Image 1 (cartoon, rainbow, N blue to C red):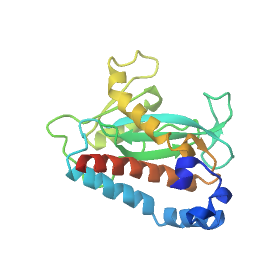
Image 2: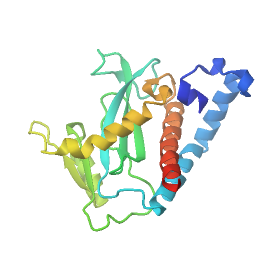
Image 3: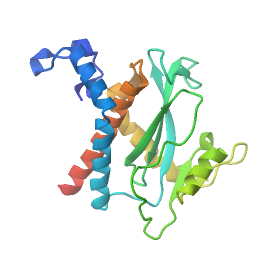
Amino acid sequence: MYVLHNDIAWQLLPLELGFGSGQTCWRRLDRWQQADVFDQLHRVLLAELNAAGELDWSRACVDGSHIRAKKWGADTGPSPVDRRKTGSKHHLICDGRGTPFRYHHSGQRKRRHPDPCPGRRHPSRGRTARAPADKGYDSNPNREELRKRQILPVISRKGAPNIKGLGKLRYVVEQTFALLHQFKRLAVRWEHRTELHDAFMSLACGLICWRRLRNHRS
């Protein structure tokens, strides 16, 4: 969490705060990610939010965000929005209130929706569940996957005018990306291995859910 918040190099972790060597902490992060610790924590917190009625199932907002990648590795490539410098892309799906459900990490040119929130299907409380997304996600496979889950894709067609009012539906996911990138380690990718960057991403999603659950209970 200290590295996630401060984007500090592992070898510079302050020993006076009780941290071990940077290599020890890095290896622990790797083991916990392999054991699916962070994703399981995120799922538990989502279940708690759902039980408290704090999830808006009327829509699932999808978007992507480019980040600079300082090291080449899996899921990196020339960024189309950063003068072709090496980068990666975060894809995120969240509920109507901006609570992060799932994310997907890819190279710059791959654009598909992240997997939906795991677990049982949740009712939409009498409203049709929708998935607003921009033209980058306009593909038949994406639409088919959403319809299989009884979700209406609200995605503008490439080469056609944007759907009126789509921006008002999608703004919540932009807010969620802003929250995620307040964690300095996620604003720039330093990890060569995708799974280590994913560990930080999953932990950040869990922390956002935990804060919302704490605010609900206070």
